[in-house]
Amino acid sequence: MRSLTNLLGDINETFWFPPKASSFAEETDSFFMAIMWISVVFFVLIVAAMVYFVMKFRRRPGYRGDSSALHSNTLEITWTVIPTIIVIWIFARGVYGYMDMMTPPAGDTIDINVTAQKWDWQFQYPNGAISDELFIPNERNIRLRMRSIDVLHAFYVPSFRAKSDVVPGRVTTMWFRPIMEGDFDLFCAEYCGDKHSEMIKKQGVHVLDMESYETKLAELAKPPSHPVYHGYWLYKNRGCKACHSLDGKKIVGPSFQGSWGETVQLSTGESIAFDDQYVQESIYKPQAKFRSGYEKASQMPSFEGQLSLEEVMSLTAFMKEMKNEAFIKLVSDEDGLTPEEAKSYGISDEAVAAKDEGSESGGKGDPANEMPAEPNK
Ligand code: HEC
Ligand SMILES: [Cu+2]
Image 1 (cartoon, rainbow, N blue to C red):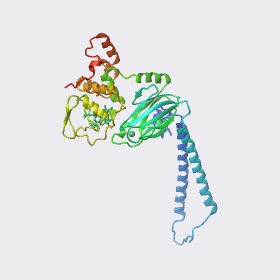
Image 2: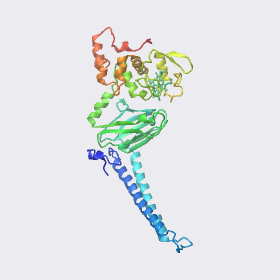
Image 3: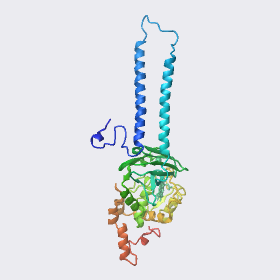
């Protein structure tokens, strides 16, 4: 049963299933097909017998049936024993498959921490790098340690045939072994609120060869050093983007566009300056003050203990820059802020290094001076 994509060359994908991209896939698919064919066979047999009996024993003039039900021990035993054997076989095979999936190979895994939150994923690698998409090497056992900071989520990669709940207050582990390179879809398979569908990452799981994996990790481990770029990077990688837009649209929380330095209305009727103090409080104690119109929104989690003061300052520098038309244009288009754009805007690492060398006095462009030390109105 091959689909059109097969004809177009994607041989690993079938009409029914996505590509078999992990070591679980072969077993899972063949077991699924076995159960399906067993069901098909019984369905056909039972429906055929039913139709046949309906016709053969239909009510006819002059025909009189037996007054009591007929009984056959042979028949009773057959249709009890055969299905029992089949369901026991299905149960046993299911248990073995499940045990395999629940038992990571001892000592031979790459461990990655997964944090699920409304409404994004965050992955932390052995070298401390973090990302919002999953990068893993091919042909290696991957073990995920998964935590949720708010509600129930579920990590699901159909191409790996791997799925597990991510439960608040608990660490769940799962493992798999990718067997082909490529980009695969990631789903949250447990309804988790308004933007549940934002947790679908199309092509968000990247299986790379070992070398590219290591290069990628080294790259991810080094956050940008310019505060504005660093702030943008945190915005993208730490889940803020699920609730705060850059293009002015309201998602769940207010957009970050153009807010800096403005006076915002709180739900209590008071107004307050959107400054360093307000940003820091909003990140560490989001429930302290609600912006008017957002008091009934899905609550923002506290990032106290998750984001350092330095990171909060970078986020602040980024929000401050979100007043600047040129910058807004760069970050709010579809592909976000690309490294080239960061370079052209003078906030890439190269630009920082170049400016540091050039100016002893620390003119504009010196990261220290870009820190929003005082609210700028
Ligand atoms: C689950 C959704 C959600 C996530 C994730 C989230 N926020 Fe929020 N945020 C909100 C909502 C809703 C509000 C408005 C209500 C309030 O002030 O608490 C808000 C308010 C804010 C405010 C005040 C803005 C204003 O205009 O009044 C700031 C600053 C902020 N968030 C920063 C962040 C940062 C930084 C992150 C990522 C580290 C983040 N938020 C992640 C939902 C979210
Ligand atoms: Cu979810």
